[in-house]
Length: 50
Image 1: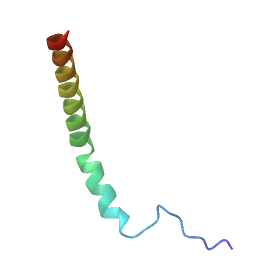
Image 2: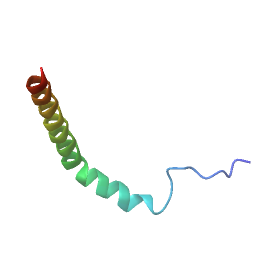
Image 3: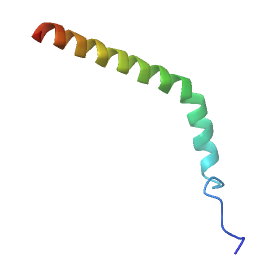
């Protein structure tokens, strides 16, 4: 019963992890930029409607 495969030990996960680790900072920057833009848009809408 100890032959259960680990969920994070797939042979196809290595290139995916390398790609995500390489694009990690860019994804974080894009998420931060979109979050700031959404916040600015929300503030602008509140200021315009209020």
